[in-house]
Length: 527
Image (cartoon, rainbow, N blue to C red; front, side):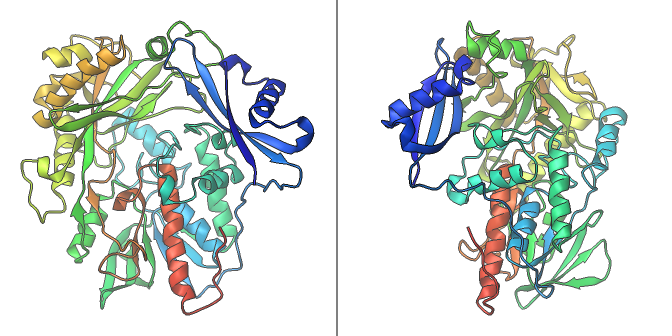
């Protein structure tokens, strides 16, 4: 077993390997001759005080101990008779396929969108021509929503599975090893496509299948068990194991499942706006007098308040980032944020959202699984109308919003389709707008300078998570009433980001493998 210690240094000392080793050995009460290897295990910045510090966790292997190599992905010879359908090629779907190949199963991915490269033309069309392709956009397509909206890898879901394994697989397929060390790892939209392509190539070479422009259009359920699926309205394909990894925006799939009698429930989610400041201002606020320190990354922030009984908090904060149009239908406006790997854009943006439960909504009905979805959909449509029925967003300067004034002009924005000046209090529901107004003023007291009219509010930030949940058995991970159907990832309500979705994909396939292993001893999974 290795030895872990934590040391505290100044940011400029982080590249001094000799100093790190010396301090670590002192902390561990070891001598140089006692160890055979060492590494930085975790790195996190502490900027709470004017004296900024870097917390470094070091790992030592002493004489007689063995340092295990990075857990590489290891496919097995597959059984062509054990085919599992995976609906969606986001992180949950890709990791489910990779794990299936480790178990000797044959994964068949059906992705409604295009491959990761072809998606780019459709993203350009949204930005430049305001045209939304409902099958290929920031949410739909190979790699899922995370590919072209940041690639943040931070998760609090430590109990759901092996976070380190999920990160190590990314490194195996081309991600920088820094993601294994950083407390808030991030890859960047510019680097993720090549990693996704490497995963797809490996899946196909190992015997799996990946189909694009392949949309789930029906499911066949017999005797409370899945028996087949229909893709693009074509002939039925027989499957007894289906991993449903559609992501949080596949509304048509939710409607389809509901029509086929698949139980689902309304789920609490969050909705609000995306706020953009200059990165220079956020650096000044967060780093105090150390704003020009070249060893400090672009600053981020995390904010939360309870306002009139509901939580208001920052979501998906993007330092050095860009606000992107993420609608999945033509008559709606949706925003999200992302950052390139260097996080070197001059703007910082973050979702500021209000937690909403089904019971909080005016049209709440106990047995209506779509009450939150309909609320989400109406806000997005109302914002589209307010912005002139284009992919421009309704916008307002921050203080103007709080004071109810339509902004006369705007500073530059990273949002390419453009802005339309409106009074957002007349566009957003009062349950959202009233709490945001109070929250911005409180956030300004926490972060001196945050509450400024130089900050611009872009509406709405509405795809924080799925507004529905598809219930499943906690042990088998099958749907609570339908055998062989495995609700998975963000779309089903069991993940909240790339890594937690990836872990859930692994967990669902492990459950399938265990079920199959009850009648066959050929399926063996290793941690």
